[in-house]
Image 1 (tube, rainbow, N blue to C red):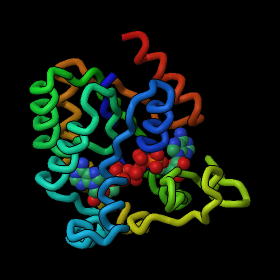
Image 2 (spheres, protein in one colour):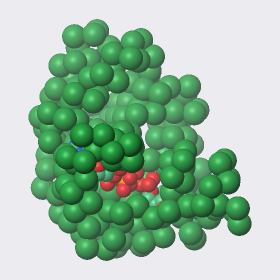
Image 3 (cartoon, rainbow, N blue to C red):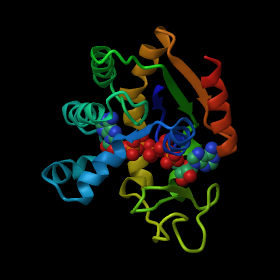
Image 4 (tube, helix red, strand yellow):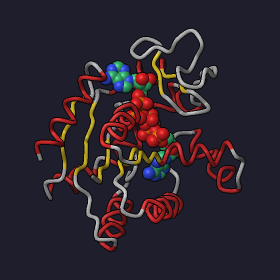
Length: 213
Ligand code: AP5
């Protein structure tokens, strides 16, 4: 199975794609996690992109496409779900080109939605494990008293979750990412998912929709 999850920041792409990858036994590929890892390791790329990421701007198409194409080569025939990629029309078209070349077309594109006010509230309460990247919410998906349930590490807030940065990310999403919704809708690959409601119930709904098609 080859899937993509689109949607505004905080819609629940990370939460749902991790659960779906586990359910279907496919790889979870988050370009945001890949880029943050470069920053954490202080690589040349990490230092180059730090300012952009922290102020909520997109990293260039060339950089992201290069990371993704290496990842696809590593994966070979294994199925995957992309989280946060593609984010521009250039990226969407390039992904199709790479997958067609490998004879592994994309099966479905999940479009997870949530209103802007919900997103602001989710970002304010989001905490992540710096070790395994597991995502929590102080109210909706609370961690235990020991921090991360898996690593027992203390949780942290992402640098780009400050309210002013979230507003900037939403603005960029509306400008640059929404055009690709039509790109996928026009050829029937888009599957709309309401991102509001109980987390596990949303996962079950997505699984049922995917198993129907
Ligand atoms: P990235 O890490 O991809 O961030 P994003 O797309 O902005 O999305 P988020 O991770 O913020 O939210 P999410 O939808 O995954 O929600 P989550 O499940 O965590 O990208 C970060 C940056 O990297 C970008 O700004 C850009 O600079 C760069 N970048 C990445 N990819 C790029 C690309 N392709 N091209 C160029 N640049 C790129 O949930 C949010 C919170 O809500 C959590 O606390 C969660 O527990 C909670 N929650 C989830 N679902 C529910 C629910 N149903 N009910 C209640 N709470 C919920």
